[in-house]
Picture 1 (cartoon, rainbow, N blue to C red):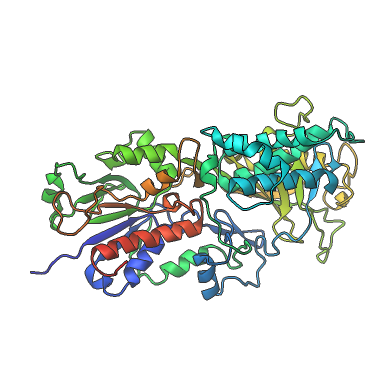
Picture 2 (picture 1 turned 90 degrees about the horizontal axis):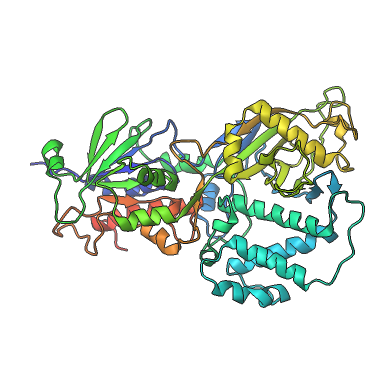
Length: 548
């Protein structure tokens, strides 16, 4: 009698799923021991890694950066497959070498004497929050310890207390001159808010008041510089998938329900009766009505999809996930970050093909959304965008990042509405700037009320509305902790003994991988990669293929 091989089904062909499949398939002896399959609801592999092209340049719609090259497994793979060099221009290929030009609403350039003290303050505060060793300074020593004693502190409230402590420690300063509608304090608050908005896109927390302070110091970065991948982030996933045989990854296979057998003394006999392939404990239902049985399922869907699954009572898991798992899913944060690419529209009469017109790396300071001083025609959804910069030095494609409700609003807007809104906003910011020859970009009207920066095309990501993701990446929200990230990684059914011969329901029926299951590298591709390895190794150890 031929013994059936245990079947492993991986749900999701993003970084975590493909990494797990690669490890399981390439490990010595595993091909003879395990049957392996990856099912992906979309029409491509990569998940939240999605390299694309926009007017001749390679860009990233999702994951963009290698966050530190020292020890990063993503960097190592990129080196091995020669993805760090390309003849074709790519996003951030020069790592933003230009000094930023900081402009306040109304077209006022801010010099370093205004910007640098607030930037340095913000960096010191974030370094402290992230547990980095910083020099003793008056601001932190006066108020930090008091902040930490208060339970439930958010990064947002910590930062604002830091700003107010800074103001309290400063002697009365001379008021700024020549800034209509701006005082020194309003400018400092605007600069600080701009830096907060950048932090929102780093963390995906739409409001930093929801980002937990205590957990921030657990997050780990790899040392070294942060870089983009010349040939595209997608080459990393494609390289891992290239070792898998044809047919192992099945696209367009959306799982709608996962039936499993909890270890509570009960036993779902229906799975055994219907199966016909032994006693595989997990039954997967697909959107096309088909079913598949498995001994082990590695779930790599986003935290956003899991949140919807428990919130809507959709029956994604049957029986429902145990309380310890649903509580962790509920408490953790999962935000939306989107990217907006715009092609600048040059005045064709004044540009020839050799002209390398450089748009500045803009940092944008706005009046607060509730301020009566704000320009009425600048759209609200642009006001919490921190920067607009070329994707590389002389590119005519510029990029902004959005987070939270502004990122969701961006998804709902048509191209023309985006172009008009951005043209109004940028024209207001640059109306007095000496750093940009606007006649090249403004239909001939320079330094007048009619001047208007124009754009030809736009391309935006839409992670919030994509039903396969429902957001971008996870963060530790106030009320949550790193323990919840560890809980996310716990397999089901939960038990201390996962040996093959243990009594009760079969072990390791549902395993979880993905960036939201890694305690110190959540929100990153390398976190997803490491989680895929972790769950593959868990199964390989279970079947005594490896010793850990």
